[in-house]
Image 1: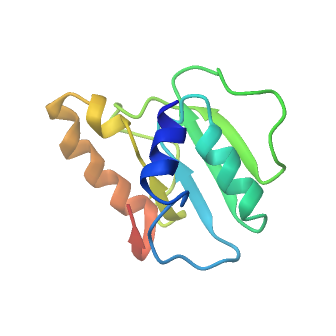
Image 2: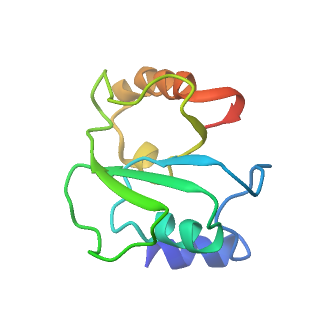
Length: 118
């Protein structure tokens, strides 16, 4: 329901950043049901989508360019290397994050290529 609400509020756009249409690697943090990642993967078949959450509650079938990994976004260290992603999507995690997690989000910037979006 929250995903549909956001689509209605944003004119059905999945993201608003200027990002190329091919060969982009996207990280979706705290994906929940995974609907955002699946929609982005369906609409952008040349993108590679990596979605993370604490629990594997996503559907069994997903587009071939989308994968789900178990990852705790509140941890200091992640398994991803620096300069891996072109775009990091964090929608509701920031709303539900305790204030002390915010300094950890700086590490997300290191995961993106220089000049890319978080």
